[in-house]
Image: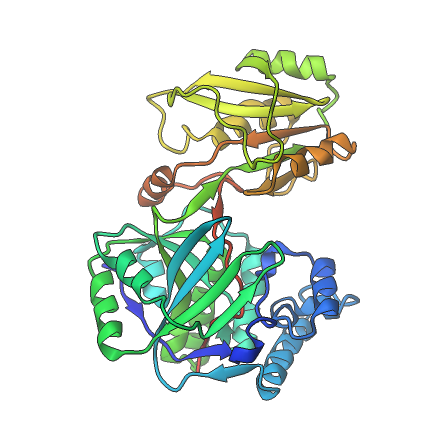
Length: 417
């Protein structure tokens, strides 16, 4: 069963909550972070992307982490943050694209990660793990949250949503127009009720934040070895959403070259594996191509090349396991690896990814500009498949999912004191 924990939250001062929160550290480059910081010196990117202000240093230099700690302490001293006086949970609500998403900010035990009550579906990279481990340890806080899903046995999501009333303690609006609000839950009876409700949940699933979760485990281990482990360092911060209350989008691929093939040769090679037909009238303002084949027993990919869209379909092997039935697995095994020689999708510079809710015209503009030769648009993975894969200790290919809502960093912080 899942154990969740309230904590004494560090929050932006209410009058600063429109300015402090930022996008997570891993969705912007150092250069992009520096541009954001130049516009807004209160941005939490100064803490979570401290390398942006030290461009002449290697990205993992000791000074990077020391600066993160110093800036964090400076922001607290300047009154940008205030510490709660008691333990609480928090409702995190996002209004985006005409929809409202509501989750619960809570801590989860490192032990639940280790015993796989918190389930994962992606591999982590050591360099990214080590970076966030050193960051968390240096600033003495979980500065970002892990995006977690739960299967609601009944009543949990409804109760959490019902607590998002009155004036928010923090509110900010992003450049994309999404509104992020925080509502604390401080009543002891309500805190106890939430803890009890989640005791009926068997598992949590990491949707986003695999490196943040694993890094929190690493920090716990290191502090245990050093002898300075605190109870809060045995936990990490997450935002918990009912699994059927979020959106999941496909993660498209951009291909830099065809490994020496012409367009016609590439299409001919694809025709050996797929049924191909050209499609017209694609709404490029949409974020995905509506699946024209409604048969759930087929893989569906969409290829954009030389200004044309093609639908690629192939019957799903009903005897395959859940990972093998994913479109992204088929893409790797039938296209990227054998035809283009892209055997390491994580590291091959000929492959780039564009996730989620970006309109199609943004994706294909990279092809039309000549930067890439083709784009492959992916249908979203079903959340039920993700949960099944995680339940079976399976690993999904990299960049398989793009979840909405996208959460901000700095609205709620869990300190490890």
